[in-house]
Image (tube, rainbow, N blue to C red):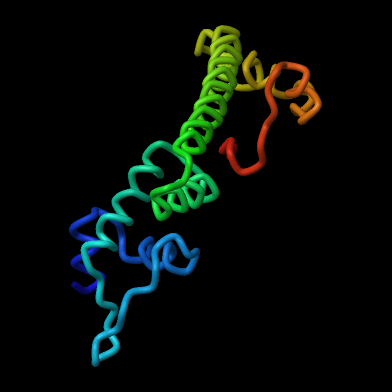
Length: 155
């Protein structure tokens, strides 16, 4: 099948398929006489696996590790379990961070009644004040968890 068919079957955009190939998550397909990529059911299965991992917000490194286990059937299943346990911990940390963010935003919102000129806005006055210092890895280690670069998505 051609790349468009693979995209349709898996719900994955063509550019994302090409990206996964470049990153080595998806093996390069064979080529037809006309130099078209030719995918097979193994590509569909692997791409579906990758997409499922991405839907669980796993990083490329985590996906790569799970794919390696998948490709080596005699590997220890405990490795997959530990990876999921670590990922779950990162999700729990992120939930706590988002709950804290929600509380800060609610506090900020409670400062304003929504009436009046912006020059008297309590939200704007509060935002002009210095914020708390950024969280560092040392802070996180003391709080019982360690932030791993690339795992928490901050924007």
